[in-house]
Image 1 (cartoon, rainbow, N blue to C red):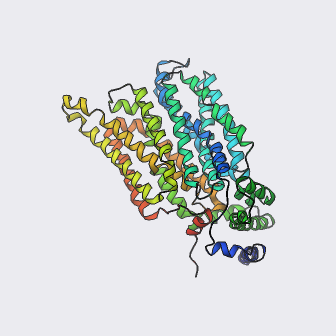
Image 2 (cartoon, rainbow, N blue to C red):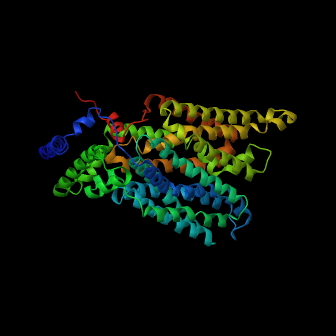
Image 3 (cartoon, rainbow, N blue to C red):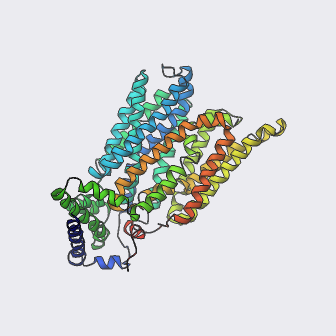
Length: 506
């Protein structure tokens, strides 16, 4: 058995060697630092990236729904159904359970099997079906089912979108196209909060079906990722996709050469697996998952996403905005304070999106994360000191928590949140990008579910000050670790980024 494995490995290596030397003589020039001079159609890439990101509008609606719907559901307003506290808790968290399923099936399987474009189309249908169930039924089980279905689309979207955008975008615009993820999400979140403050929650859910319906129609007219088509042995389709996303010049093919090498290697291994064993493919994936070229970037993403964001206070703000604003006693209508915060959070990444193409990502991430940590420290300190502040002085200081939340949103939009989703489509190896993104989605949504379920518990047990202190500690831990392990990817092609994690050979 061992000799058979060695023979297989030698055959795959010999195939790759022949591919480099015979079929593509220019490959050595690309590996030796040949300039990445792909002449591209950036306008096509930007439009396609935005079409793929349209579903994130509805993600913003889904995340914010519980924030303004729960106060109405508790008193039976605007929906024809009344829920108790426990049922409202499941109304909020059932969406996250769907996210876990979407990460496994949509992100971990469909993205690689049918491609990220078709997976996005399936997600759009999920948003439409789930929204109809939530908005048109009075049965709690059907409403929760609708929340789970929209959660499936959200979890799948969180995997499909970064992969799709990362593979179709030129390095010179990948900072901007990557920021579309947060921009669309935040605009949808803000629009949902505005509508939720003035309309019944069921009406808002029906409106949320418009973006995925538009996205589904537009996705019919764009092409799949060339890298995915090469991995699926569709060379003619890959050429057509390259022509769609870039000009048909000799340099165009250079971008696909190394991706083809990776794809051909997987194809050879798949052929051997069919002949030798049905379990070889799973065995191969397991081996790659334990390889340092996968584990290192996966650990970076897992730290920045599951700990840095979910336990950095952002999940609590999204799902329990009105509850938190009420607890910190901001002297203004909680619905419209939520609108102001979310509108500001949506505006920041829009204004700063172009900066991602000009600034290095490591220092930007660390600086923006420092703003988040400072904001959490201010909120925690004010909550601890609030009972001891003179009532006359407290009237003038009640705005401090509100300003701290705005500072937290500034750090998120400046790079602390945006850069994470950029890296997700960049640093994972090409042959494990879909698997890694799906696995990351599973960990992310489990972490998110726990973070959401513990918000009421922390407020009741350790208070708002203790909750913000806990989030502050997690952000500091993330920043210290990221300082040592976070890579700099600005201006690098996907192949160059992948080489950063390859074992050094003499």
